[in-house]
Each structure stands twice: as C-alpha cells, then as structure tokens.
Image 1 (cartoon, rainbow, N blue to C red):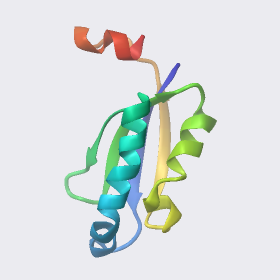
Image 2: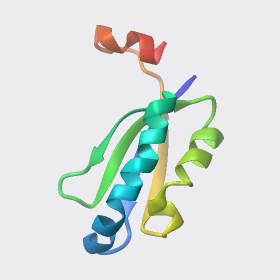
Image 3: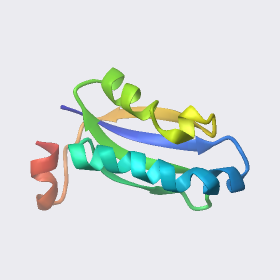
Image 4: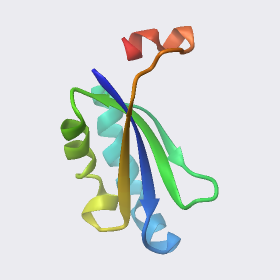
Length: 97
C-alpha cells in the first residue's frame, strides 16, 4: 500500500467552496468508509485543504479524488505527494501496515 498527502488548493472565491463543502465532505466520507482516507481538513488560512490517504497506486488515489465535487465543479486543484511512513504513533501501525 502506498501513502499520500494530498494538497487541495482552492481556485475560486471561498463562497463557492462553502456552497459545495457539504457535498465535498459527503464524498470524502466514502473514502473514510473504504479505509482509503485517514484524515482531512482545511488549511489555515482557508486557501485549501490537506488529506492523508493510502491506495495501491498514485493512479488509483488520483482517480478517486477526481470524483471529488471540488474537482468536478472546477473549484480546486490537487497535488499528490507519495511518502513512506517510517515513524508513527503506535495506534497508526495497523493503518500504515
């Protein structure tokens, strides 16, 4: 399993983001339910967000994220950074496996 930090950058005024955030979070819940996503949240200041996830490949997590309403509605761009978890809190060992 590969691990990814996904940086989301808003490309529209925050009012357009606010109008789509409920739909965006419902989409992300699918990733949490499937065990693909670990955590997500907005950046401070609110210019985008950060998501931690895992998948078999960059292509598979990219394909998943391209279904995000923020992408479908052209509200944000995404940057995918693959990383290798080396040190972590003990409670993370199962997820990072």
